[in-house]
Amino acid sequence: MTGPMTTGWLDLSGGVSGDMLLGACLDAGVPVEVVRDAVDRLDLPEPITITPTPVLRSGIAATHAVVEVGESHHHRGLSDVLALLQRLDEPVRSRAGAVFELLARAEAQVHGVDVEQVHFHEVGALDSIADVVGVVTALHHLETTLGLSRLVAGPIALGGGRARTEHGSIPVPGPATLELLRAHGVPAHGGPLDLELATPTGVALVAAAADEHGPMPALAPEVVGTGAGTRDPEGHANVLRLVVGTEIGATGTSLSSLSALSALPLVASAGVQVEAAVVLEANVDDLDPRLWPGVLAALMAAGASDAWLTPIVMKKGRPAHTVSVLCPPAAADALARVVLTHTSTIGLRRRTLDKLVLDRSTEQVDVLGQAVRVKLAHLAGEVVNASVEHDDVVAAATALGLPEKTVLAQASRAVAERWPPARPADDD
Image 1 (cartoon, rainbow, N blue to C red):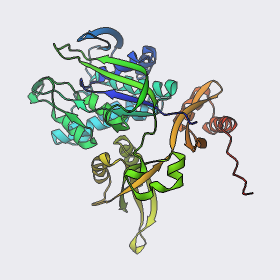
Image 2: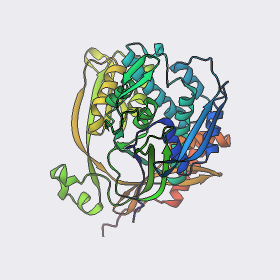
Image 3: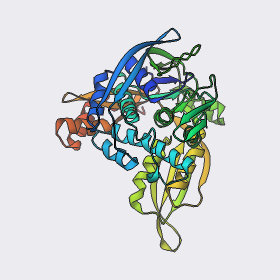
Image 4: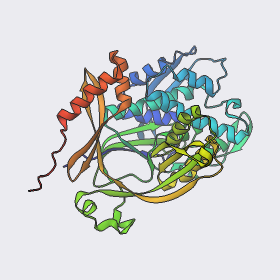
């Protein structure tokens, strides 16, 4: 039998903010020292303290992540924040950077300015830096300790009414929050109170971290973390819940609901699932090649399942690239916008398809005392593929002071010993 996938679900029916997400992770068992160490590595001139505080919200016990910051005279833009994040290890560095880039692009869009001209509000604030780095670090800790490999987010309660800002009174949800929802296909709804229940930082974290959006999957809960917001409005539990457990049964939509291929023995007998997917493609011949890594990173941050480049030769012998994006249908519009705004193309192609998906699980192997995750793919109850998580190889190599190729070789050897390749069946 194959091991079921470890999945997390975010209940956002009470709203979302950076401190609520951080509180839920701490309540789920992430040691606060792990988060503090990451924030301390930024070496900020201003002091930041993070204190998990037990509270009650409408009778529900929760953890409020109290972030206290010193007085600051620094005005930070996106490039300043990204420079600070260089002091962190992967994958936290790139994941936190992706969140800040989502925030910066949303602020630039609603204020009608270039990204580097944005006068950051939440983005540059010290408490948001602590929230983003803290949440990304905590989720990575859950990946390495619990094997969390999939995060599903429920629809976000936004609240309503109006909120006071330095620009004056604005409607709720605010413009930046709405832009984040629109650009990244994040489902949300108004109410149930006339208060701001979802902050841009919280929405950006969800947009960057969630693999899917929807109701709680069929899973056996093992860990529940409840994070509290600062306010305690009467009659409303201002909390966010993180539920982590092992999924029960298959996760994808059955093939028979998508195509006539359901009679194939591969699907019928081996438990292979099929998911609807969209592929976006564009041929680009005039983009500075140094920009392509950033384009691919932006696509992954915006919800792509995968993104890649293929070298091609166009008419008149012009060298070019085809940029391809594989994504869930719900994310296609947001990702099309990323392609159109981050590259020089003036159009793209879009096609739908059925994606065969093997059952997957996450294990880990030990390399000289360092944990390295391994993603396993199963077919008919057997492991048919095992892939070492490269981010963990990089982290282990850094911690051990060894070349990455050495750590990768040892991890691959441990994988081969634990999950040896299946021998082909005898034809006789």
